[in-house]
Amino acid sequence: MKNAKLFLISLVFVSLSNSVLLAADTASVTLGKVVELGCHRLERLVTLGKIDESFLTKINSIQITKLQPTKPTDPSFKVVVTQYSGADGTANQVDLMMDANGKGIAQTLRAGADAQNAPVWNDKDAVSLVENSLHYIFESNDSEIKLFVTGLSYLRLKQVNNDRGEKSARVQMNSTDSSKILEITMKEDGTVESANTVNP
Amino acid sequence: MSLEIFKLAFLLMISLLVSSCTYRKEKESDFIVSYNQAMLDKVSYQLINQRILIPNCISCHDSSDNVNLETYSSVYGHIDKINQVTILNRKMPKSPYPALSKDKLELLATWIHVGAPEKPLDGSDLPPVEVEPLEPKFSSIKKNIFQNKCFICHSAGKEAERVSLSSPDDMIKSPLEIVIPGNPDESGLILSILPGARKIMPPKKSGIANLKADEIEIIKQWIANGAKD
Image (cartoon, rainbow over all chains, first blue to last red; front, side, top):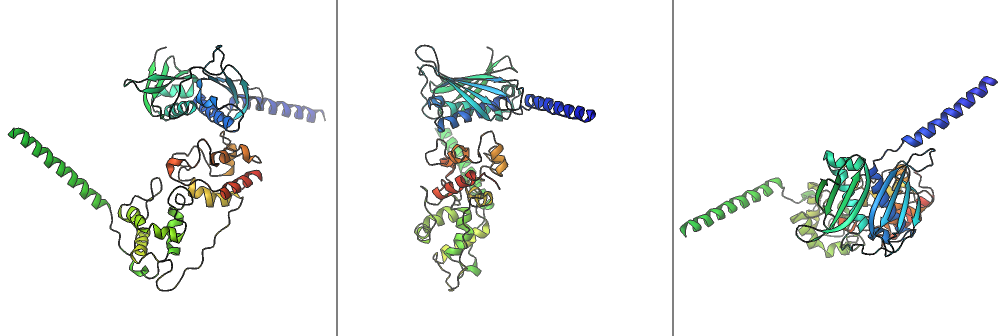
């Protein structure tokens, strides 16, 4: 009887510790992929009317943090999407909590002032431009660019003029796997014009 | 002066040479469509519809903004254009849809050659087409909707393979929440096919017709019922 109890306790202990380990270790997607899934989640939340459409048009930056889940239901990633800041310096922000596969499990809206001086995009919206830059790095075979797929930690979208004076979109990416910054410049339709790594 | 004329003549010769090479290459890689003599008095709209229009054309040419090819009168009204873009120019079906096989091209050419009749000239007829009703089951949705309008991009090796629609499990497990059993209103599949969707599927650039209201309703029912096999 005592042995049976001991066996049961060990069984429970083993299964609990396994599930904790499993929760911490099953992050099967890259950080870049989670950010892309975060963009899709953003679009879904707008479609469902849970967040404002300005999150598609006025994005300024996206930050991703890998979390340390202690149970299977805990999120594995936190993706923070920030709009251009408003008159008082605050900005609308949404925190997306994602599971180990990059599926959205919760979101928290942090209201700030309405974005001021956010660039106007004439073809694709801001979130689609960010997605295009991510698709570009996923498809790249360049080993230096791949570091931004595996270790992406932050990206920022801004409007610049290219060599011909045309309005372009530039996404700057930081990676925990690289000391450099990746700059991807696109036309307004999302076509990539250049991708370069630069020193910070 | 004479040197310039010589240069011009030389350039003209080179360009003529290049264009003739291209022309020959096109001719060699092509085949000539002939008529299927055995089918001259047997071919009919019904046969063409079953063998060619439904499997190859209707996914784009239904009641969408494109030319409608769902009825005999509509097809007959566009017969010259069909002949031109399908048989003479081979511009249809458009990529990514595969080109018509030689047999299908010959059958279509034969039908047009005999005047595109609704019924066979010998008076015979095919048995009526048994239309399988669309049901809120994955097998039915897959066969009647996904096969025609989605798998051309959403399948292995194709442009949108990462968004798999090949099984209920794939769609339920996807981080994109393609299907949320019991909740059609928040399922990505439904949100992307509704008229007015931001990035509507099939995408406009594909030329594939949007899903019809009854097709959307059936998919909704299937998801509401738990999205099982």
